[in-house]
Length: 301
Image (cartoon, rainbow, N blue to C red; front, side, top):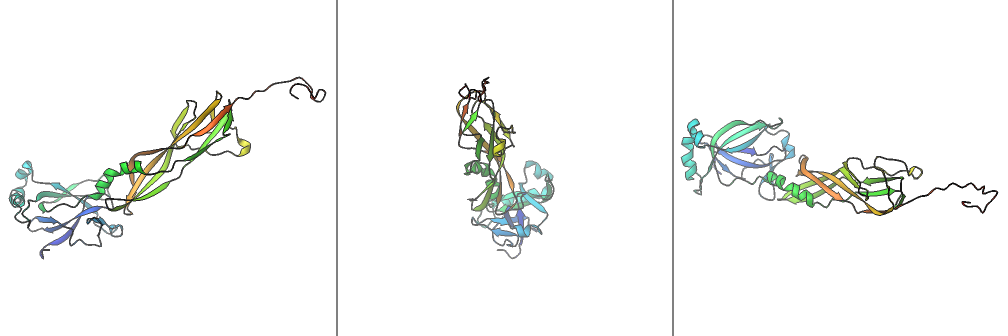
């Protein structure tokens, strides 16, 4: 490591748990090297893959800015920035790289991490960066997390009907569901990722061609002496027969990387519960004129 250089750390994304790139810069010459050596470990912690992740402990006292390297010295910039003309030949030749490979000329932009939306402003440059830029693992995880969420083994909601498994035509049949918030720990690209699935909606299929939802209403079981009352989730069957009730629970997802902040996962997980069998019977009421005390053998007695 060169004795004349100073260590700087550069956070690339807008999360407080950032997979970062470390630049070792000689500001007098406008040159930097992507390098994992010399990183201040109280700010960035090494990961199993050889990259670095920002420490949540150090983040409270960290730089209030986040930084973004952007390709510099395009054709138009050469006219606007005389520095480009002086830095581009040496950068393209790789004469200062050690391995002879050409570098990349960049500008540094920065934004206050506390502002939303972020407002980026030119900070420094142009600079020539040599070597291979560390992978932006947080962005890669963000790109894969929706697919991973759909593969997560989320448990379906339990649900029931009252009365059940038999009910009466023309009467209220109450249905209800019980779903749980679930967490899953996994490893993605060598990082510890926690996925949380939270029930957010329900779609009911009453089995007679009638559906309802998505709705946030999951219903609740009734006390035995209240069965037959109308509820928000109850349904009246107009035909007799054997059928099945279906339920799909819609889960919202969020994730965190290495214990960092919760980030939303695009889309929903739609988990179907096993179908619930139900038989709908008819009931008949008859009026009789016989006095069962006088004629105990009369019709209806």
